[in-house]
Image 1 (spheres, one colour):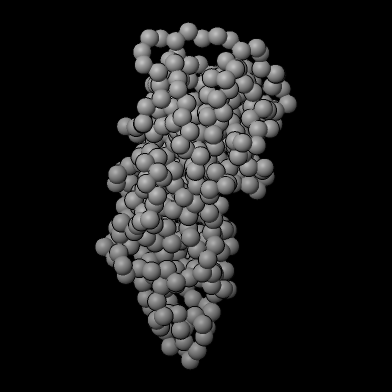
Image 2 (spheres, one colour):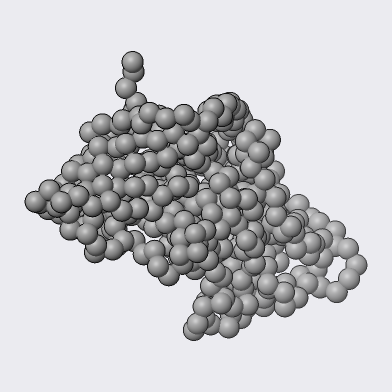
Length: 446
């Protein structure tokens, strides 16, 4: 008879059904209590939510051994974990992941404002004991997730641009994993904000919308560089739909006027955010959500972590490949203008925001890039540019490390295309792009 391993019972550790914990005091007096959260850490460890200074807590500090009875949410099988207390963590990736999950559990059970995570108690699992009973038949194992990872990896290996890579990821999630609402956000390391560069399944794209690091599910995943997953609707402000910075107090009028609406679901019931990393550096976040409860389990999390890893490697490789293979820009080409009043393009240096005919377009590094292109165009007639020259132009303000230039150009191209003003930026080759201006323009600073 094979012994039961902790990994085999991971569905029991999703927070769907409360667990029962038995402890003893130093003199052997037993105590039994419900515990809202048993969190899978790895093959040998779990974390239990420390929420109250109660008898259970007192017993554990006096006698570190305990048992926890967990239930399989689909088969009603019972398992008893024999555990030993090791330590408590009150910050960091594990704590934040548990805090997010607990917020969902609390809201789902009507315990908002009651459940508050004081710490994550780490336990060594010394034994997993299957309890005899008459469980329901096990559901058929899920299939297709590994195939989705493989398909995405193959697509990414053939991508020649950032646009291709983003489309490969979102397309695979929709077609291969049934994920209907997803987005990719990239990190601006200077402002410590994440900006949306691609999305799928929303009425509006939200391209250019921003979320601060540490804000909402997405921001916490970025700050802690760990997956953050909730499976129930939550009203907790930090884990519900990300609040826009324009709603915060003391925001300057200009910043408030340059906010693009966040495209997320109004009432998400399941959310999963996974950091996109490369060589230990945070590049962005891959985020999925659903209007239904219990849509993303640990298998979905494993799939997204693998896909995000491939995406991070692809982004870095594409940047290196572009830098080493780009050719110098050809001579400027003349362009004819369609009839109509000249476009009034205004630039505000305080945040590099761009307004076209008094309507906000873009800001930040992408805004600085567009302003440079338009100035060169009006002064010299240039229409062809290269990534390399942008990196060498100090006026644009690219960070020295991980500038994500390709992502910023993707953002700029998409915003201009959605805006439909008669100004476009299009790729003309690897590491090269062209500026297309179909209306006369007038530039104004400030």
